[in-house]
Amino acid sequence: MRSAVSTTLAAAFLVTTAATAHAAPQTVQTFTGQGLDACPYGYLCLYENVNFNADAPGLILKTNEDIRDLATYGFDDKTSSVYNNTPWHWGFFYDKNYSKSMGGLDPIKTVNYNHRDEDNKMSSLISNSP
Ligand SMILES: [Ca+2]
Image 1 (cartoon, rainbow, N blue to C red):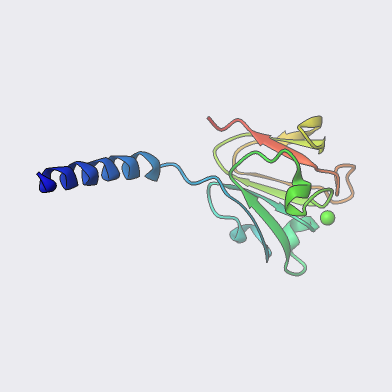
Image 2 (image 1 turned 45 degrees about the vertical axis):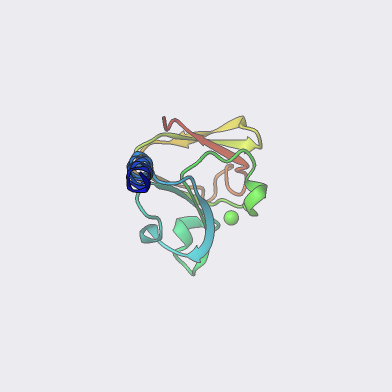
């Protein structure tokens, strides 16, 4: 009897693990780095400086989830370049709560806000990920 219960529980655990293993967990992380190589596949990366922090290591925010207010992660009005290393389109906004569009970025594309109006203006972002 005990053996049967244990087997059932183990099977349930395996099913749960398999169902979630293919989808990456929703994460937002800030760290110091530079270059496109610092942004792993499956993530959108915001760089605090132009040219993906090429001149020196700087702050990077990597995310695979929508962010309603970048101030939550200390990244409001800070983004100067972006690498979209995901299969989804992302939209960017001047204000929090996805207000006032400032354009977007297609899959596996970059944008550099050097000398552009959008520099240091992004406050929220959203993807069309299912
Ligand atoms: Ca900046």
